Each structure stands twice: as C-alpha cells, then as structure tokens.
Length: 140
Image 1: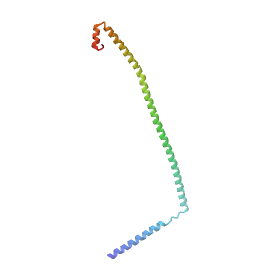
Image 2: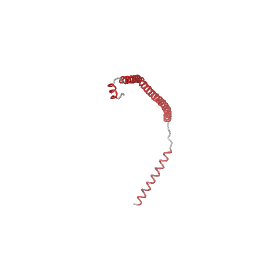
Image 3: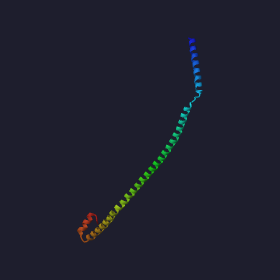
Image 4: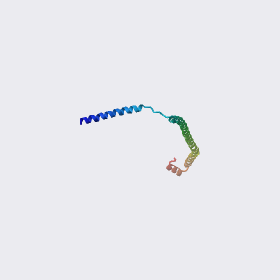
C-alpha cells in the first residue's frame, strides 16, 4: 500500500511539473499571421480609429446641444419671471385705478354726512322733539 501511494505521488508530480512547463512554453510562442490576416487587423485598427474620432464628434455635438438646452431653459425661466412681474404690476395698477373712484365717492359721502349732521343739529336747536331723537340716536 505504501508503494502504491508513492507510485501515485510520483506520477502526480511528474504530470503536474510537465503540465506546468508545457503551459509556460506554449505561452512563449509567437503567432504568425498570414498577409491576409495582417490586412484584416490593419483594417480593424483603422475602423477603431475612425470610430473613436466619430464618437468624439458625436460627443461634441451632444455637448453643444446640452449648452443650447441650458440656454433655452434660462430663457424660458427669464421669460416666465418677466411675465409674472408684468402681471403682478398690472394687477396692482388696476387695483389702484379701480379703487380711486371708490375713495373719491367715500370722501364725497363723508362730507355730505357731516353737512347733514350739522344741519340737523342747527335745526334741532329750534325743535325740542328732534333734539331728543338726535340724543337717543347718539348724534348729539
């Protein structure tokens, strides 16, 4: 049994070492290409270079488009704020012009009320019953 184990171990190590050497030697080999294969690889390299330049151009166009979109957004926001300020100004202006006649009318009615109360007080000096009613109502 001991001999079988040693034989197994010897075979295992010999295969492991030869396999390792074979793998190292295989990786050192150079690949020889036919002229047609070399032409194909050159064309692939040229295509890769062309694709790189075209992708660069596309990226530049996308960057320009992003800049234009940013400009459009800024313009839209500025326009929106301008319209909002205009509408706010229009509302305040309209309110002022709408309320001006109301203030004038209130001033006129206040003046008429004062004249009327003064007239009633003068007339109440001659009429005792009217004087009593004015006191009850709180006008005297």
